[in-house]
Image (tube, rainbow, N blue to C red; front, side, top):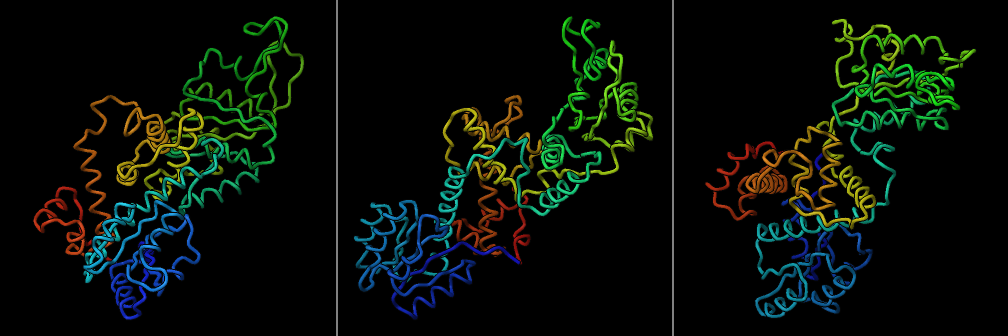
Length: 446
């Protein structure tokens, strides 16, 4: 089922003309709300109305200009398009200067109406997007939440909830920056162990020479430990809590063996200690590599792999849940604004086009950097890569143009003639641009 078209509140006291215009706009892909009077059109309307208003000027009681004035008082950013007779043009121009979005003289063709309404609808969508961003309550940090409405992320949330209650160890796989730590923290937070510590270990940064001290600890006066204080290792800190091994494939084989032996024993004995201490752990690990393949190659211990892989959670990349990108971006912008003590920026059409057109190979990490760059104004596209790796003006404009053409084709249901009319492009120019951007009108039909 296709998504509903842009919302239009249509106002005209001529019942026949109202019905004909409504039918033409529905055929053009709009969701039309017809009203026979301005008073009816005002009912139930507030600042959260996501559509636009198209109204006749000459109407009894409340005419189109008075309706515009009332709508302007309600929401100055609500696009209002006036339909005028030739004798009302001067009046309509005055309304345009006062803030009306546009005016069209009768008789206005269906294509002309549709083009104006699509432009107004795009502007309204941008306004509502920015309002939603500003009104979004500050959520907990990115590490503490799993955001998204896509089917894959809903399935992941359900799986996380089930795994959290079971208490089993688990392996979390996925691309770099996809949110593996987010999943691990969500499992801990929803588990019976949530009141205990979540101990994060970056396996790639471990110093093998300090493994015993950092993981097992030592009694006072032992080498590496304070003279009058016991050194508590990471395993003891995670007792009755959760131990998270990030990028577990980076652990050298000898350390894998030592860690597996301690976990299996269920106790630790620190140097200088006369007795062993109980060890109750839940172990979560993450990797972006094929651990089973590493086991076959002798690069990862089979016993540790089988301990971790009883449950495997696959974290989807952003490319598999593109519909979540705007929500995630809003969250990252909100978080960055609060953290940097900077105002929430107004999102531009170019920013939204970038969100929709980019592949986000760096996943959540790259999207978060883009959001921080947007908030700080450091870079139009965020990131800290070399200047030559960032898109230039020509690339930015091409991305924006490509998205505008795609949106026009979506609105036109894949009808190339209607899209080129809406964009006011000659046929040859339109098709040249389709070829340049690799766009097929047939992909937008049905």
